[in-house]
Amino acid sequence: MTELISADLIGSLNEQTRPAHEDDFGALGRQLARRGIDIEAQVARAMQWSVAIPTWGVGTGGTRFARFPGPGEPRGIHDKLADCGVIQQLTRGTRTVSPHFPWDEVSDYNALRQEAAQFGLGFDAVNSNTFQDQIDQTHSYKYGSLANASAATRAQAVAHNIRCIEIGKQLGAQAITVWIGDGTNFPGQQSLTRMYENYLSAMQDIYAALPADWSMFIEHKMYEPAFYSTVISDWGSSLIAAQTLGHKAKCLVDLGHHAPNVNIEQIVARLIHVGKLAGFHFNDSKYGDDDLDSGSVDPFRLFLVFNELVDAEQRGARDFRPAYMIDQSHNVTDPIESLMCSAIEIARARVQASLVDRKALAEAQEANDVLGAHRQLKAAFITDVSPILAEARRRQGGAHDPVAAYRAAAYRAQVAKDRPAIRGASSGIV
Ligand SMILES: [Mn+2]
Image 1 (cartoon, helix red, strand yellow):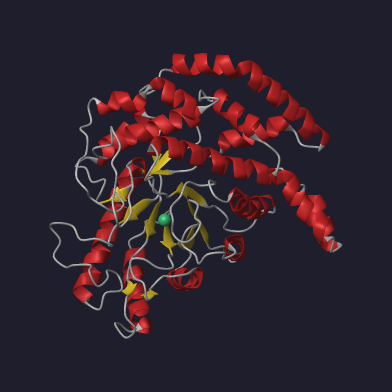
Image 2 (image 1 turned 135 degrees about the horizontal axis):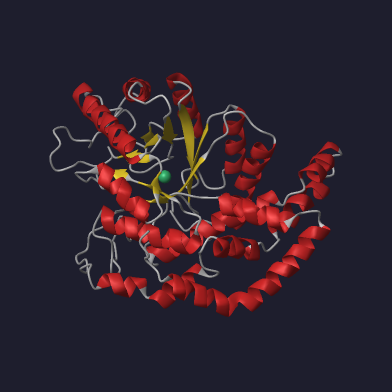
């Protein structure tokens, strides 16, 4: 195993914070015991948790207007894996990476798999890219990919997705996430019906190439890059597609891909009900698809999503095996710091949701005790579970305070010596 951050440094920092941590952990344990909750069971649960890091997330993102590269940016997939390895070493809750093709293309995927394993990482869902043109491609995706009016363009997009599945098999992945930017900017530009039919037909060709133990994650997005209509704009279009394609196809919920104020946890509940919840792309937002850090704006919404997930888990909902990934853009922070904080906030929401007294909640709901039921959720949400998360990290070799350890290790300054500074005013996500 390659040591990216000195284990001695992590150990000495944890030793410095040990008295305060043990004090807090003991106090929380006594508080939870009064509520009938075993803190050790919660630590064990937190230690099992993992959320995937997207390879594109460790690069500085951008907007349509500009991108401001930071020092020591990853030069390619090898640097990205190292950065993801740092996140995993310090947080111990991000054991897989979600690669993106063609951005992460290499000549030897078995070697890439071994390289990732050296950092304690495996591969999660592969992501196809038919929302931009590559230098050597024959047909442009300017007017769409899987839903394009041109059969030749659709076939090219299908072939790319099948190639992603082939790569994913070599990496040990078991799912492909398909998101397309197809849609229109003008009423009348295309037939809303025919675009969806073209999409379904193309997706059937990709679906046919899935190995037996693979899943297809369909990601919907309300708008952008198309602004009048988007082919897979919402969970309804996604669910119809998943039901048309078959049992391997499910609906992926990216928290940012909904209209403002939409009740996302209710969408999650519906998808769980029909056994079609593929998983998540976590991020946070204020206005639209802002791609802000998970839990940074509305941690209560994140908690309410996990409230549905923990409820489904505990009652043994059928076909319930969601995949968890982060998908956010870091424009003004060090991406490693943002991803570590996000991984912690996501894990926090899950532990908090695990504290809900579901029996008391159900009784209050049965009795139409409105505030009684609400107070059950709030009691869990306002519990500071930080000591549980810190203890879960420490027991696995991670840091009490991952950001403090990362800064003390000066990782970014170290890698900046080898990674040349990126200049220029490129824009857009990377
Ligand atoms: Mn996404």
